[in-house]
Length: 283
Image (cartoon, rainbow, N blue to C red; front, side, top):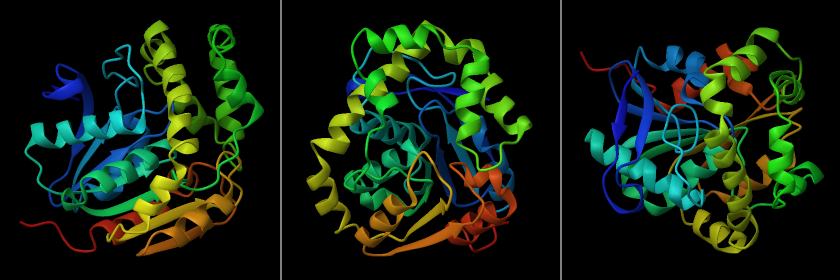
């Protein structure tokens, strides 16, 4: 599982961890808030027979570097661009889960010529209504967020993750929390998580109108996949977002919460493979 050091601009010298598998058209997988590359393990397995699949630990998460930075959508998108440049990838399809979908959309808007297709799973799409929960508002408060972060322990994290599933699966919940636990929940990881939670508010609130106008001009195929029982991102958000893209399709998953690619792995990852690749890898 390699790392790469990015070059150029504000991400110069930043180390990114990633997982790569398969051979064929390039697909890049972007995790959500608090996630990590290996959380895509079922999707990687489904896509790798027909594609070159990269799953990235976004800056501040997983094993990637966690600098003191304003973690905004633009910052993440610039890191993705530097990654593609460093790997010599001219064009790729993007798949984003939750906040990772916001990053995928931001990159597609700023570099449309580098993107073939965009798949958004349980997506949080900037430009469309998303009410901030009281818990999120508390975390965003200075000092209060740091105090709450210090209270975090594995059982607390597991309870929070389990609520995001329609029917929690202990094996999946355990993996999402326990994988690289010490690295992800250390002081640097907590600081990066809080910085992300705080700084992206501007993207969703202050820049909503600009995102919405730009999305209406994005001439790329887009697929949204959303659970009907998603508590983290309301299904109404998915409906509104799908209507805002010129070339979007929306597939609903019944009896499903915020992790369609884990809760209904075979069906959802099959849809992703069909949408993103739909053709055999070159021999």
